[in-house]
Amino acid sequence: MFFPTYRARRIRGKEVFRRMVRETSLSVNDLVYPMFATYGRCVRKEVSSMPGIYQQSVDNIVAEAREVRDLGIPAVLLFGIPESKDAVGSPAFREDGVVQEAVRELKKEFPDLAVITDVCMCEYTDHGHCGVIKDGDVDNDATLDLLCREALSHVRAGADMVAPSDMMDGRVRAIRETLDTNGFTHVPIMSYAVKYASGFYGPFREAAESAPQFGDRRSYQMDPANRLEAIREAAMDVEEGADIIMVKPGLPYLDIVREVRDEFNLPVAVYNVSGEYSMVKAAARNGWIDEERVVLETMTAFKRAGADLIITYHAKDAAKILNKK
Image (tube, rainbow, N blue to C red; front, side, top):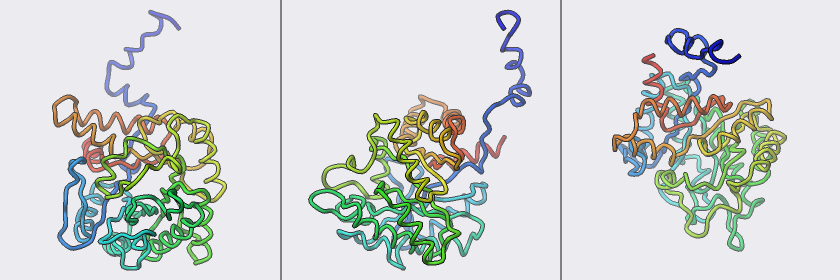
């Protein structure tokens, strides 16, 4: 077709036609809301670099989860900030840890809300890295046992799904075998399969108090320049038993989301990370953008790229917008 036989504006001219031919749909059911559980009671401390996001004690986690559930958001993703830390992150797998307590309370209050737990050591180690340190770097195989203990403790507390984010080789298989051996064959694993060593994680490290005390995480997180490696990483996690595979961060890696979606016949999640969130919030506060439009456009971009699930700090805002439509 060529002008004037085909005129695209014939369809664009009416809202009803635009809705009828829309190729990508966005739903509240696509959203997962991350939350930061900390020790104590009546704690609700806003993260300075993430407006509207809080470190919260379990009682306030439950209170906010009620709002999340009432908005129709189907799931939350829990991170923990312990009262103390040590070299091996032992608070991560304590029965009375903050995540374990939060899981128990959330499942008691909201049985139908899916509770997913992040499985990693960085919030719990005094050095801020994602596992056991040996000769100045994370010892991959020694860390696997700790991750398995953490995942098992979460599931025993009632977690509906575990999400290992550490990027240790072989951790999906190790966790799968641990869960299966202990009678939790029904619990799925959402793997941070493609996780880049990104500059977009800065605000999260304030929220989770997990900044490395030396060096960085490039020996175990992916090089942002690599595309084919993403497919290899995802393939390994699929082979090891992942039920959902994730790409993180989101917006700078939409091409990777699409390639992973095309390559694998599993649900694909994307993590709209803290730096992406904070940039939108900062620009909106300065009056530089229309926040509501940008949030919906961002979420739609993730869906258009192929994501089935969107983990985002914008989840409550996006749900309020979608529920108005």
